[in-house]
Image 1 (cartoon, rainbow, N blue to C red):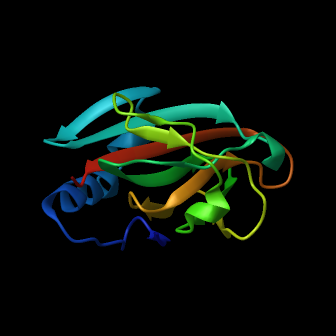
Image 2 (image 1 turned 90 degrees about the horizontal axis):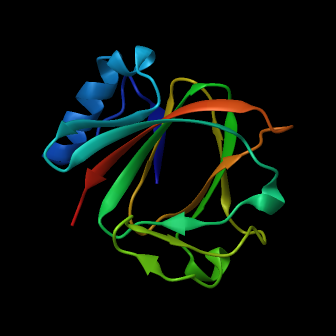
Image 3 (image 1 turned 30 degrees about the horizontal axis):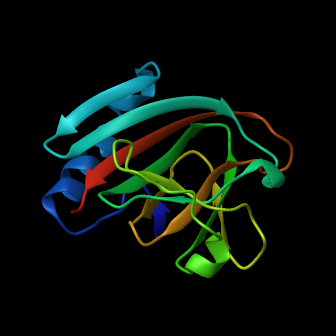
Length: 150
């Protein structure tokens, strides 16, 4: 996991460079929610939802894609760990969606405070629980850019 400002964030690889250049171009600011192709193996999703109480969250990870997550409006808490034992028992990998869900939060994960301008890159070995309330549940508008890594 890497956390920083989207204006200065850097990462190795053509897919990450394309994704971060697209993010720095700020065209996402006016996009409605949906999916947008950026480059070969790179796409973005604009999402809107209400953040959840911690007890309603589940860890997830991906096998083929890394996530670049950034809150556009609102704020949320995200939890992350590289320790499968902290993430809990998996519910089975969904190859079509490139996602596997795990158990809820039982402690031991790192907290990431996500607010506009902050970017979090999550690699396939990073179990993460996004969309958690920072305080009380509230509306969130978020950008998730997926970068194929395998």
